[in-house]
Each structure stands twice: as structure tokens, then as C-alpha cells.
Image (cartoon, rainbow, N blue to C red; front, side, top):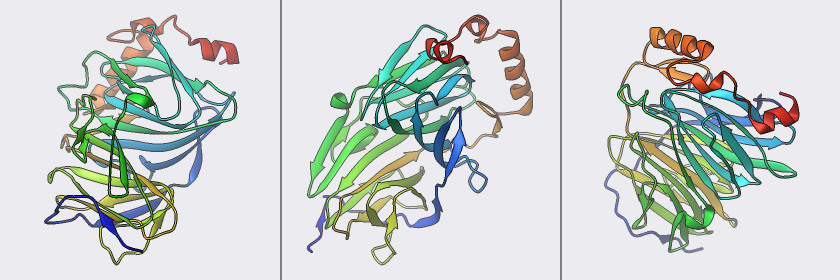
Length: 301
């Protein structure tokens, strides 16, 4: 079948330097996740801390838990999840919706199923630099219908963050980030620029594709591909089914990392202080003393 190509010329396409299959594991309360970043073999890929493909069916979920020092990006693939936090923010995101949460100096929240059946999505944790770790929490939520999209020569993209095919996302990224959801029809080819100093990866959601080198073997769903140096990604769909994957890139922070579960700082002393702040309900965690989410209360957590 003939190959069609999106209009872009790359001088140095990035090659795949490491590949992982994300296997299912238990997380939260009864949830199943496929973790590809934040696992034993890949604890950190600056500035990315965690990438989970999650699957959760009520009453399982992610009841009340804290965060400090980074951002979480939740992108729903199927079903709906309700988010609540101790600032009084509450909302439900459904298929194709996005929530970009900057935890900053501290947030306690819950993420629980809001529909029958199995809810599926992706959650990405993005580190914050030392100068941003203690900023005030904020949210950016975009419904599916408002996410920027573009199509060209058998390639369709949803621009969650950054720019592709001449289309830009309205999302503001504290840590400079691109997050693109691509669908390639059979026979389609993609050339997508990536800032040359950024780290980047691919995570395959559906179908199988060839990445980086046209002679490489096809890669199937649930695989994470770390990309090497270069100015962009080349990908091909040589199968008879649609290929869907996300391409994510970010500017490395290049600072020391100290992490204790949901707290991500620069030093162990800062982690110790964060634990103390949380346990004593101070320095951003004041409202955690008496707050419980409606979802947690209703399920007896």
C-alpha cells in the first residue's frame, strides 16, 4: 500500500534507544495500572516521573491522597473519573477529556470512577523545577470537544500540549511540555518535530507501528519507547489497522531529585519537611485536617 507523509522535513530523526512493555500491576485501592515510567527499570526520565495507563472499576479507585512538587496530567480514554480536593474543587472528566493539575505546594484529592463498567485513561506526572515546586495549586481542564485537533495525509492528532500540524494547544505548561495523541491510518507516515534539547518518548495505545527507523520491527500496544537525540520523530503504520500512540516531550530540569511516594522535591531534607507539613497540617496542607472526599466517605474509606 502507498505511504503518505505529513509535511515536515527532519534532518536528524530520533531513534528508539530503549523499549519497555508496561505490565499490569495493582495501585491505589483495587485499580490496575500499566506503569512504564516510575518503575524499577526507569525511575525517572527528566522531567517525567510516572506514566500510568490505568484501569479502574467501582468501588476501586484512588481515594484521598496528597501531592507536592509536581504536576499530574489525566487523559481519559474510556469512561469517567470524578476528582475532588480539599480546596473545594470537584469535577468529572469523561472520554477524551483532560485535567492538568499543578499540585505545587500541596493538594489532597481523590480520583474515583464516575460511571459503570471500567474506566481507562493515562496519568502522567511531570516534575517541577525548584523555583516552581511551592507555587499555588491550579487546574486546567479541557473537555474533549475543546481539545485542538488537526488532520493531514492519513494522520490525525489531538494536541493536548504543544503544537502539531500547525495547531497549538491552549494548555500552559509550567515545565515546557508537548503531549500529542496521534492516529495513523494504514499506510500513513508521520514526521513530527521535537525541540532538540528535550527528552521524549512514545507510548503505543492501539495497533502497531514502526518508529525511528523504517527498517525497525513493528511495536504493539502497551510499549514505551524512549527516543534518543534528534530533531523529531518519524513513524510509519504498515499494518491494516489504525495505529494510535502518544508522543510526549519535555525540557529536562537537570536538578537533584528526592521522592517519597506522592512528594517530589530536590533534597531529603525537603522531603522530611514535606512529610512534617502534611502530618501537622501546615504550609499548604492546612485544609487536610478535616477534609474527606464525598467519594471516600460513601465507600467507607
